Length: 188
Image (cartoon, rainbow, N blue to C red; front, side, top):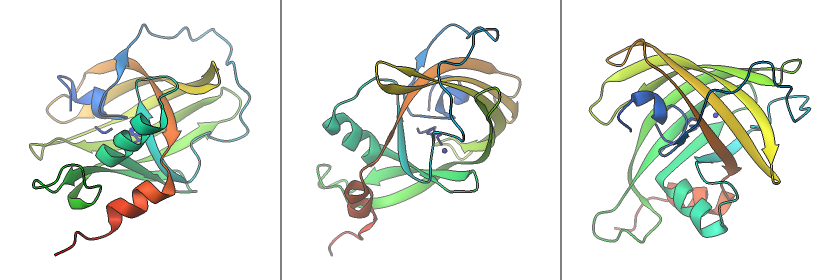
């Protein structure tokens, strides 16, 4: 789901938690637990496929494509996911092809239909190579036709152990052609 980024990015801020879902997220006040969900999902709205988790509601297609070229989360049917941090070739940053990809986050999520929330256990690898483990709890809603996630992240193990943060994210599917282009090896 990196969802995390993602989180799925995405994972890369002062607190490693902010990277549990996406590379850039906006901090928000903690959601009220008493507030009823504004949606009625039968299953997680983060379906199998390629995802990007943005802090921008209603991002345009160019912003989505660029976000997918930076971090892409591969979501599986069984709730498992991983997020790749994409590194571009240094001699032509405009090319969508990879020089390398780094597994930034791995996790497993379980959706609770009754509460309209999702719990994910995950591990995030920082650029330094250090790994932080923890979990996120997500409440879904819709905001002006955009899927919105209010995320409460907690680090349980690692250099940032004991830290928590709440933030929001707006997940969008990455276009298949963008991900396909990223996976093609660079021309020699």
